Image 1 (cartoon, protein in one colour):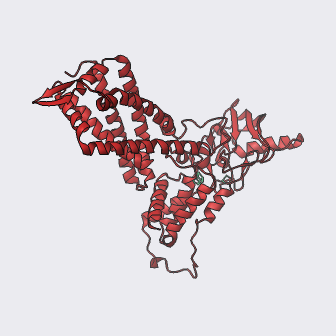
Image 2 (cartoon, chains in turn orange, green):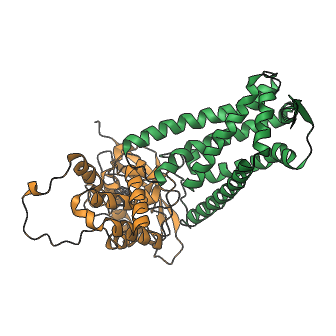
Image 3 (tube, chains in turn brown, orange):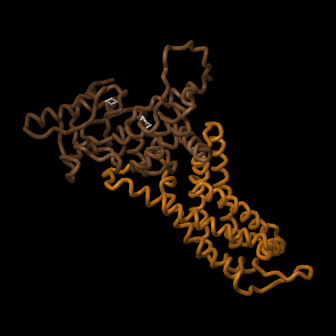
Length: 252
Length: 211
Ligand code: SF4
Ligand code: FES
């Protein structure tokens, strides 16, 4: 792909801390390489801001290769930017051209309060996991794999659900700020495997209860979450969570 | 929400079935007899109470869902996501539902109230006196304003169902990808066909396709 340079106008949400009000600030950046990643472009801006004695833009990032789920930017009206099945850190500047304007906002949801600039507090997800997203068994020594047969299709479905990186883009995209895609991925991932069976009822009930307590909205199946999920978690998991929840509710 | 929605959908099937009687082209006899049966059979009247209860519950649930969900994002986005990833009608169920409610008020005033609480002129089939709903229908649907309102009502219904039908089943936890495709396709066909069938009623009366 041909290499080119571009100048951009960035409109970025700046907010000092969780208490302050926040506003958009506009920055011009020049000489951005099409081969940079989106976060490197922000790094370039930040280096300049530091040189100029200004506060750099705070944003979450860690692995920068699409596996940790920390990066979180709502770019031009879409969580994680314009590319499909992609995290912000995997977005590259070749997605843009000279003269483009880019608006960058934090995830917006009451359950994800802004800590600073583009960083939001996603500990609500941790508390949902703590409510049941685990298996409480002593694994002991590894047993022979053949002693516990698992249907290949179920193993694949479970693996696909386990790919969720907990980034929160599903919440950011949802008009209801619902965390159902995330919770359903976690519930399906465990419920589909034999090791997850003993606790499947309490898991579904407790995780959903925690999700409601954290202030996420209810799912109305608009499918916006699925369209932005970097790991392509399927909405089928939401239906699975609903059935897990309904059966657990009726039989517990 | 999903259960009351599916319940209301079953009612639509009955309703469209009776509507279809106008195309018997028998001067409204079949339609009038069917309306008479619906109006006078005690079981139907009891179901009617259930229907209104279901409708009311659906409205209340809808309002609760809409407002609770809206409150979950106090600060919104400067650039809305819009249609990137979801259909406008799936995000507008509250609006479509409200339009349907307005339409329903007009519709009940046009047909249900007169048939229950007013003395409509009657007509006689083989010695059986029945209210002439058919004549009412012909009269009302010769007014172009009414026809437009009814077509808009049917359009709202179609979009409401396009999302609502499949969404209900997802909420009830039909998990298998195979079934969800079946439901989605069936729901799509159902929503479009039933809405067009309803809309054809005022249209065919207005254009004098029925006699
Ligand atoms: S379901 Fe997808 S969008 Fe939601 S947290 Fe997991 S990876 Fe992110
Ligand atoms: S920084 Fe780890 S997924 Fe983006």
